[in-house]
Length: 176
Image (tube, rainbow, N blue to C red; front, top):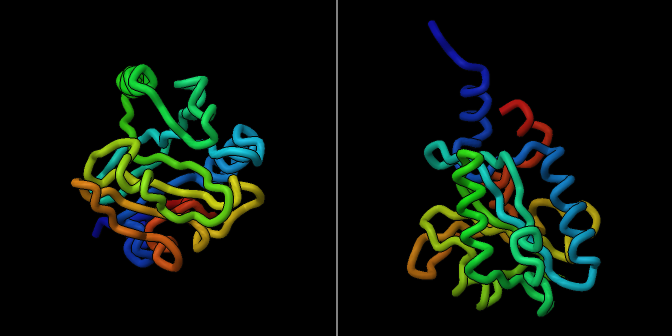
């Protein structure tokens, strides 16, 4: 009988869908968002990786201001067309795809009208994560905004208590 401990743990913990970060990558991402935003304005990044079924595996991060130096000049995250051309080129070169994006908000992690109507990547299954308080400290999963794009400006909200079953960024993530 062939079995996989990893598959059994994933099935028991219901981690076969959502987005997976190694815990070290998650912590360093938050610290870098805090640094780049300077606790004064939004900061963000694209999450690059692979998708297997309904699970996305984050393998690399590209910050908005590395693609567009003016990305934060208005105080909110805005990228122009050349930034996306550079992003797609990076993805091709690394053999990865954009599985999600993350950006900060000054207070709570709600999805603004601009976020809802202007997804960074308007592809079904794209994950958008919003981090409160400009990513200061180590926000608990339940404080994050976690949204899955469904097309035609429709989103599934995985925020609050639901984030525990969708955003996998804890110690167990290291083994799954």
